[in-house]
Length: 81
Image (cartoon, rainbow, N blue to C red; front, side, top):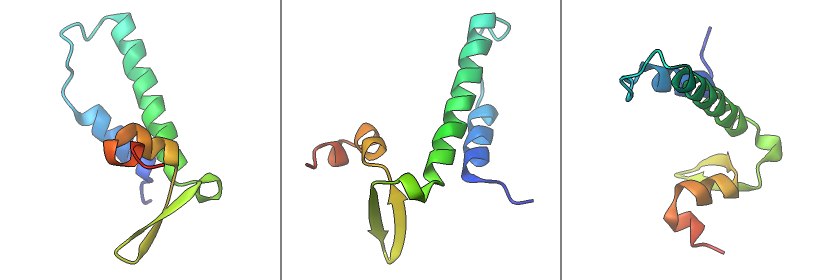
C-alpha cells in the first residue's frame, strides 16, 4: 500500500532523534503526540484540493495550495498581497 504525504511527514518527524533528554517526561510525550497529529493534519490539508484557495504552476505541474500556509512558511509569499 502506498503511503500518503501525511504519513511520510509523520514518519519523518518520528525518525528524527529526540531533542529532549527527558524522553520519559509525560509533558514531552504529550507535545510529541500533538506534533504528530498536527503534521498529519497538515499533510491531509495538502491533499484536499477542494478547499484550497490558490493554485501554483510549477513547471507545468499545478499544485493546490492554501495562502495562509504559504504565508506562514515563506516570507516571500507573506509579502504578497
